[in-house]
Length: 221
Image 1: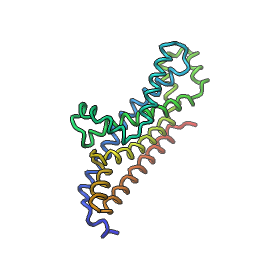
Image 2: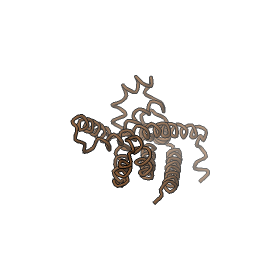
Image 3: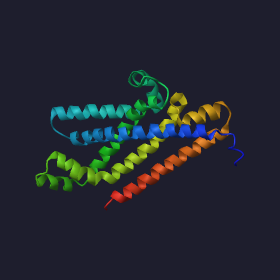
Image 4: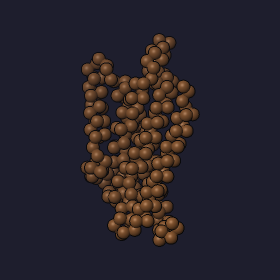
C-alpha cells in the first residue's frame, strides 16, 4: 500500500486540502449567517395576514426555492460574471465562494425554517404572554429551543459544501476535487484520486463527529 502512494506529492496534496478547508469553512460561516436570517424571515412572515408581509414571504420563498433547485455545477457557471466582478478572478478557491454561499444558504434556510416550526408553540405563546418583545422571543426562546436542530442542519450543510468544493475544483477552483480530476484522472494517476477521496471522507467524518457532539451538548431533552 505504501508503494502505491509513494509517487504522491504530499506537500501539494496538503495544499489542496487547505484549499478545500478554506472554501468549506469560509462559505460555511457565511451560509450559517445568511441561512439563519433567511430561515427566520420565512418563519416570521409565513401565514401572516398583511399584504406586505405576504409579499415579503412570497419573494423570499421564491428566491430560496429557485437557488436551492439549480444544480451547483450549473450555478457556478451562471455566476462567473458576478464572481469575476466581486473577486476579480474566476479561478482559485476565492472564486468558488460566491457560488458555494448562494447555493447552500437557501438549502440551510429551509432547514432553519423547519427547525423553528418544530419549536413548541406553547413556549412561544407563554413568552409573549409574559410581555417579551419579538427580539426577546427570538434570541431567548426561539433560537435556544431550536438550537439542536440548527446544529444538525449546519452539519448536513457542511458535508454538502465539501461535496460542492469537489465539483468546483473540476472547473478550476482548486482543492481536492481539482487534485482528483486534473492530477488523478487526466494524468492517469489513480493513487492521487484515491488519496484525495480518502482525505475528503476524513473531512466529512470530522464534520459529522463535531456536529453530533455539539448537538448532544445543547440538546436538553
